[in-house]
Length: 270
Length: 304
Image (cartoon, rainbow over all chains, first blue to last red; front, side, top):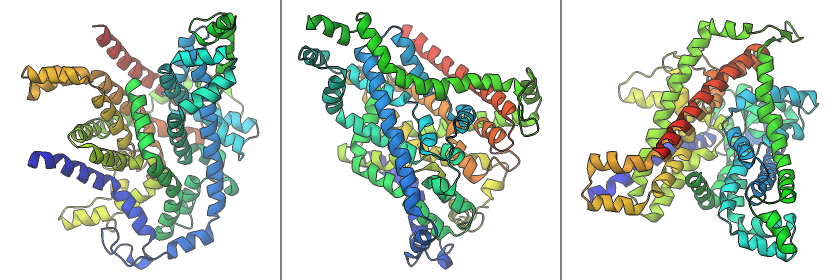
């Protein structure tokens, strides 16, 4: 009995510790200022929605959310599209030096972002794309991960189906969007959500290229608020941070099964 | 006739027409890769040989002077030492702990296993820049929850983020917290992919405890372990970037900085593009050696 219970105890305690910061985040966002430092434990105070009212009055959260949404959507869709084309070519129409091209995609995942930021920033600035959505999105479209993950999944796809479709007169576009996309929909959905959440949480690149207040994304807006008006105003600051985190958390809760499964499959086959 | 066209189109090692078509599909992806990953690497190399900053807005060729200045700068070596220390902390937090949690999860029956997965993975979904603000509150000297809990236990509560000895581990903890779930999932996937028959056979043969771990489990797990360690180490420097930027800006006196953050500071705070690029080149070389070394290890093992 004790042997059966021990893993539960350890895992439960780990989960508790891991989730504790979220509890503080939510609890602080609902705490009146005078009760902030009363107890070291979350949810120990009378709760209030006042902090949310303050934030929504002071910050154009709608605008920031829209900016973030467009940025994340563009980045995720762009990477998926580029990844699909590349993975299809690598698996079903391998050109000469396929290994080299695959290597370029895989190696790109290992290049630390900070190494590429200065040159990318200079390029985007020279193109006049600072504080524009193309400037934000285009450098995110290095689809190494998308191409690699989709390639792993396409490798297991039965070729005969594609060959039969070609006999029926299907072109590349049909094979890709009428057969491979529908057949791999759960993977694509999980990949999309992963990339979307990843872009939603981007901080440094948007901080560099979108520094005009009307172009802020949520992470940058929350940070600027923390460094200015929101300094030491833990309640409103955490209310803003909850609003910034909520969309990704909802997405994860809705699709966690597909996401975890796809990530694990990619990990094993990789 | 269609059959021939299809062979060219769909099969591996196809004729010229299929190959060129495939190449055409690769062009868009390669375009962005070259523009925003590989060209920047080369551009860094060029930049690192020039002096270019606010004082000297025209890039002037200075040869290896930037590198020489870096290698002679004690602050650079402090950053290197801290990067190595940080990688050790990451190995602990993003390798050993996830592995342990994954092993525990295997002991648990299905619906609970999935619940623990979702819960432990949750921080991966949060923006680390936003989460770091919560950790700032947790770390607050005297008034923060950590200080209060430690105080309640009769322990001293240092001002973690402004203490040269504690700033780096405190920042590392945030990065470890954020990325633990991802590595836990990879470890779990690796464990689940182990060939059951081999494990069963070993058990039937009476392998147990430490010998079982050493002669059966570890060799089978080796590729997963290596991948996990590679991922944890190579991304470790990256992980700490945002927590450092949000929580300490590398301080106090550079005691919580790492190479990634140093590159960023040189480029975007001090506007010394040449020095930043030289640092970036050294960093790329260092990580390259690390990654190649691990791949070499894996390759040799696969052959042996």
